[in-house]
Amino acid sequence: MPKITTCLWFNFNADEAIAHYLNVFGDGEILSESRYGDAGPGPSGKLMTASFRLFDQHFMALNAGPDFQFSPAISLFVDCADQAELDRYWDRMIAAGGTAGQCGWLTDAFGLSWQIIPRRLGELMGHSDPAIAGKAAAAMMQMQKIDIAALDAAVER
Image 1 (cartoon, rainbow, N blue to C red):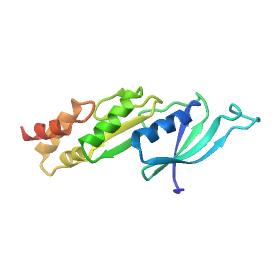
Image 2: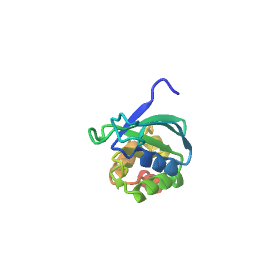
Image 3: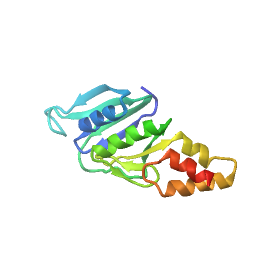
């Protein structure tokens, strides 16, 4: 296990969330689980914690009830190589109850914020020509799901 791992607090639906994330991304696994016993504090037999991996990133899920909620102040950034990869992740998250935000952000059905971002956006916004970077930023600000072809068209104008 890595030295530092992101811990995600769920409202007794961590097992559903983990299954969803494994389905969306395809490259992951549950590494370990522990369950509440008769002494609680959660329901006996219910998942208490789970360690899981998505690609090379490790997470800890804490299934601890409604005391805390996710906030967009923390989001998970997904680097997408191309439009097909971006569409696959975005569409699966939205289809499963997620909500589209602006500029490539979405909130999944569990309240966790994600940035589903193509590498091309970073290339354009980091371009040495400020006019190109500005056009890319202006185009992105008009989008929910990022459209690489529309970004490229915007910088060519």
